[in-house]
Image 1 (cartoon, rainbow, N blue to C red):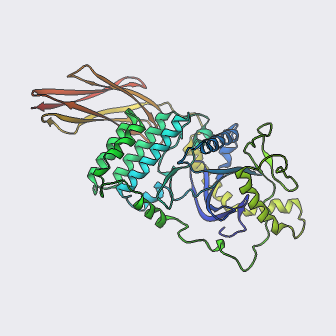
Image 2: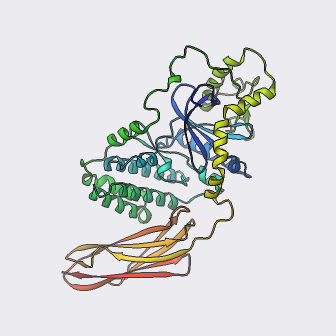
Image 3: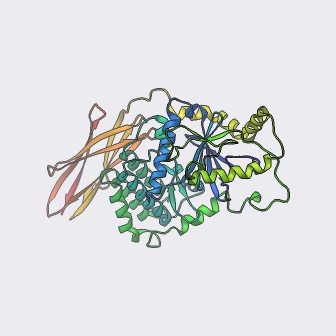
Length: 455
């Protein structure tokens, strides 16, 4: 597949592909020669009632956000249909991700902190605009060659499932990301790991802005004493499948073999056009005289015109054109079909189970604390792995304050930590008891831990 004869809407596809919950991602080259991405949606998912329309709406929302100045997102160039297939085309590379970098080894703490700070800022901006990401995890955090952390697939997981995730789900995903990065240090940066664990707890209780502010305020505890993109950028360049320009990006002594992508339409609504249906860009249709051309259309057109220079040698039978189109993307389609069962199982298209809490366990970091100390209490909640919201409260026997909170659970995680920081002051010797009560989903579950304060 690594040649100019394989592509979609002017985007040339490479051999670097990987499966996600949405379908098959492929590293690509845009019509103007830049790194880009192409997502072939899983046919069984995109074909469900209403899914295609919700995906288009999510992309249009992204484009409005970007035009309004919101940064930190992978820009979407277009969503196109080729027959029954639906493709999402990005204007920027979608690899490597943090998941890719973590498979190669631990990420340096300064770079990991940079990724957390930038993703927290992006998520906060999304929430302020009234939208959420819905699927924050290492596989949706893209790292550029400059070390910037960008979010991909915003809103797409929700569009497939037909719901809108609350901001708490994004905060929980960010917290899990922070804990995963802390665990990757393997004991080599204990202070950084402790900082990451602390801000992970803050994200669920005080919010992403507070967690981000703490990272910035306490960056001196990181190795090197500051947050930096340098190590992250180096890791991204080393990991990138495009460390060297691909051969076909250079001038070729011989033209590629003729190809025909068939009739392709963009699914994005065009400003100034009545209705929300697809706009056709097939042979013989020119909408440019009717309205201003969008950036997405210009990218599409430049690639299409490049492809059509090969087609002018003669007219081909429509059936042969369709056959060539299917051969063009046959490798991708076969791979997607083989993996369809696994993808469908991940999505649990049947009615998902209700969230249930299996156990609650509370522990204190120490048995005894000295004068003017802050005790760290950790509650661990184990669920059945369903998504939902846990409502809980912390009670302390030495005062009447009740710390209440909620936690958005994920369908791919069963264990969650609920931290409590209890500051004790004065001269006394007392037994302190912290009690965690999980209020919902019911029945109410409770556990507690005691420790001694001596001063």
